[in-house]
Image (cartoon, rainbow, N blue to C red; front, side):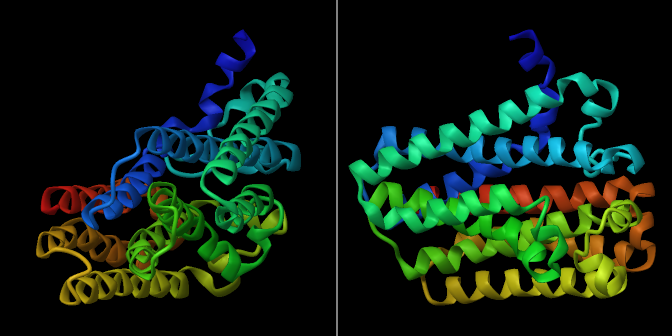
Length: 298
């Protein structure tokens, strides 16, 4: 037990807020559309989302240590892992066990929903598990897949999954709303890769910033920001979201400040961590604020 407590930094607690915010967004969409609130389903979905995030983080921590990447990476508050195994290599097996236990919890919750709600949730579960299992070792070698996997996992799967566990069906509006965190979470991980480019390249990774350079990656960052705004404005104009949701333009606009710096600094952005912080705020605050506007407008 003491060793598992010692492994807690590997779950990267500061990055776990995004999962409940995305679950809350899915719940708020169902509430806004007039569906009855199911407490047990919400709690289990929240637990499943948190442990899926923990599984990704701990598996990434373990695999980066085994590959030797951690030994040549200079961690920042937002990239390069927690540094736990570099200091305590004897904890590697415990971190792996934590990843497997977390995955098992996610699977168990998924099986519960299959029995109680139906098999239609299976595709979400399979895709989520594939992202957990393949992100570090395989997806990081495919620029486009690596780019969209974070947003797919957090933005789409968690939002749509949370909505499904409340309503027992899918909706096109929910998928469209989930594109807002999809683009922002992709931007979050895209920027966090900048400081690790040299180390990642030595280990054979080939994400977008490596293959096409940080300037092109910065343009993608800006494009995703505009697409986020476009989706938000379109959904408000179509009455799929309330006018109050336009408040989300405030945290989204932080990305324009971030872009002006990352375009010129590139992988040196770690020397200006406040801009990485703004990116984190945008990606986390936007789905949370969006959920609040839906609850308030219901």
